[in-house]
Length: 353
Image (cartoon, rainbow, N blue to C red):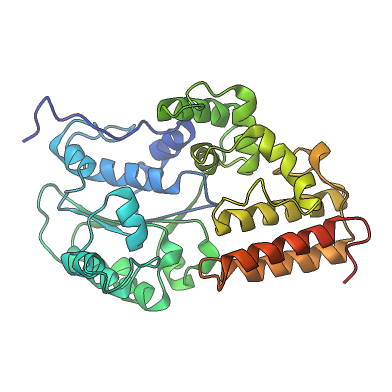
């Protein structure tokens, strides 16, 4: 039984997510697929749906936030909720792992997986076959769904098509094209909505102020605009930039610095983030070369765009680098190669291939 002291620790949903939650709660299908690029709040919306489906006193606007079910989700102990995600992400977000998996990781027999393992998918199937513990339904939340390999996806497929009893699924993805067509076809699709710029900026400023970190508690509108631009307009990605301490002045200096071969502004960043910066810069140069507006950097900060063929080749090279960026042979040599290649491409006369 819930008590008055059981208050929800879940952060309020962003306004554009709250609007989508209200709409999705009116749907009656047993499986939803939330899809869109990163940074639009797929995980937050998926969890809000799960909370509401399991809530003891739900409303049209979502979960009540104070019943025993809501509290159980807050403390990650709800017996009727199965969260299926990569082990690395489960550990980051506080969702418990299977005992045997946790022991293997604690004993350093293996590292936490960045994919959704087939063993976890089998556990999720088993979960759907158990008797409900609290209410009238059970929920399986899968995020990011594209992290299921073929074996894991096929394991979940039949249960997703014909669940036993009252089971609901919510899958969230940042790369729907990587999902098996059979998975997509068994779900009601929902394309994530992009927020209005003012809504995104207001939310971002409020979230950054709540972090309480030195230098971020009084984020200016101008700083928030730079974070949002660096993230291509995606609010939760922008919040990641803010948490990482991205300085607005540094961001605007990056294109010209990289064109000079100066890697110092981002040398301490993780390799994946360095590569993301190069991909954003390549995108914006391709946009300006085609007569369009850049998306990630202010137009007046960009160097002159090389020929289109040069940029297209660079784009393919960066896509190839992305496939191995998490497992580089030598991080230092890789960064030196990136710096040299970027300078070659962006300096006048350095784009010849």
